[in-house]
Image (cartoon, rainbow, N blue to C red; front, side):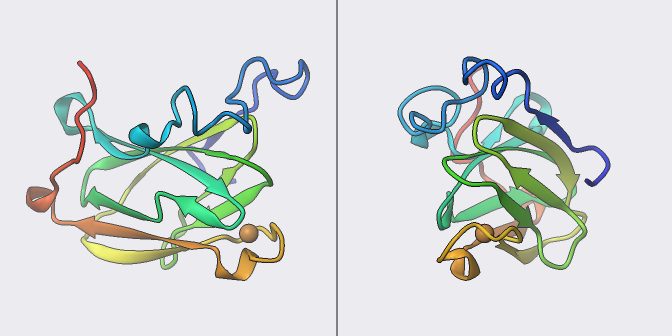
Length: 148
Ligand SMILES: [Cu+2]
């Protein structure tokens, strides 16, 4: 597991899912509703990206973030365990149903990164890939600002 990554498995598995996001209602309520996915710009230019991994897509499929800024990823799964990697970097994240995995990565330069799933998750696994577009900081316009 890369440094800086932490998995908040919490007590979800032990106590029947009362604490982490419920995989069944992810899209309906809480942190991972559709309108809250993707990049959000917080105070002082910090950026948080929320994603759902599910058989066999990442939601959202394409994410735009600024270069040279720490990007905090928060990801969960709607079904099986998935493993994202940002091709061409050594950054990666595991998506676990019922838990939120958080990690912060900084992409030094603009570029495009494929995000293949690296954990066999079923029949469509080999086609499961997202896309990360790292743009120069001045060109980044977050679709959303966090509520302050
Ligand atoms: Cu997979």
